[in-house]
Length: 120
Image 1 (cartoon, one colour):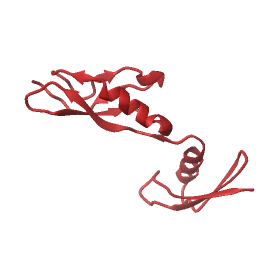
Image 2 (image 1 turned 120 degrees about the horizontal axis):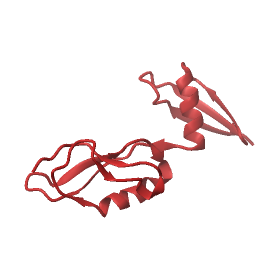
Image 3 (image 1 turned 90 degrees about the vertical axis):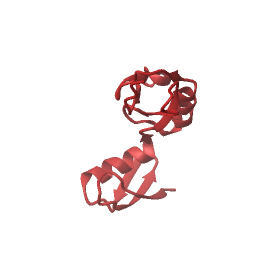
Image 4 (image 1 turned 30 degrees about the horizontal axis):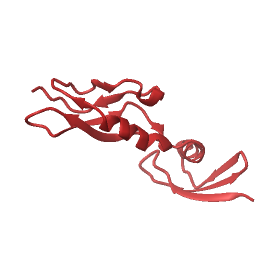
């Protein structure tokens, strides 16, 4: 029995309403106005990924938390595991935007990067 999922595409600013029909390994996408919608829908139902943005602890007189993010998308099911790893980390200035805070987090091949410069 085919399964039907509806999503709003976020691959471009148009925001197409997508209907995705999954029948075994076969995925059909309807409603996309560009090829990016097709790609987005298939990826979203087969192996969804997200960029994680959060904060970590920092020892600083001016800042309470340091904003960080994954350098590229990670599997959606790993978001909370990665957040737990980030929560274990405390950094000290100086930190430059783009500095690696955690290298290859959880063996995913993705680094956690600082998104703000803190000099003191």
